Length: 183
Image 1 (spheres, rainbow, N blue to C red):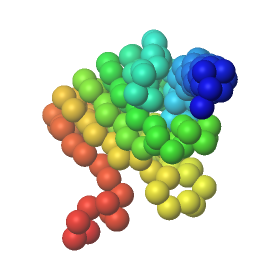
Image 2: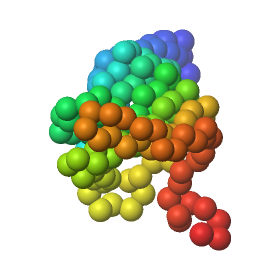
Image 3: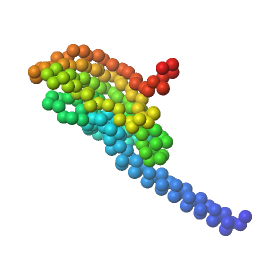
Image 4: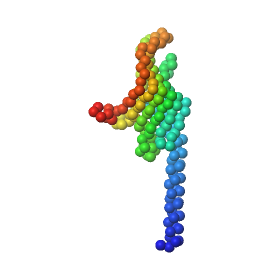
């Protein structure tokens, strides 16, 4: 080959590498801007609750870190009806879903949390009565959930008074039965 032909190939390679790099950078910027909001929306849709967070940070590995997460019933109740408060929540998306630009939550790790199950004895209502999975009936839509360093409380409320019936410190892992060997 002539030096002129080698130069043309080198220029083409530089152009292709530059174009691929630009596409990857643009995709990363787009995902880092929209992925945190998608994580909060998917959590809200998955649980049928109102979800708030102090901060949401996107990571290079396709995960999201949420600080100060609060999950409350979809319907406002008279008392503080927070179902879950967590200092840190890590959300991992499926790599394939990110590539297809249809992010789906695969794993959730909750650290330093409080789960508060409340029953209003006067009305018979629970703060978790609207909590549900709304994954649309597709298999595999429920993510693996890991709970670390937290507690679960069951409280009864009556005539404005609150009584904690049970409080349990907890570390746990929740998975679909199909993901557990022998289940």
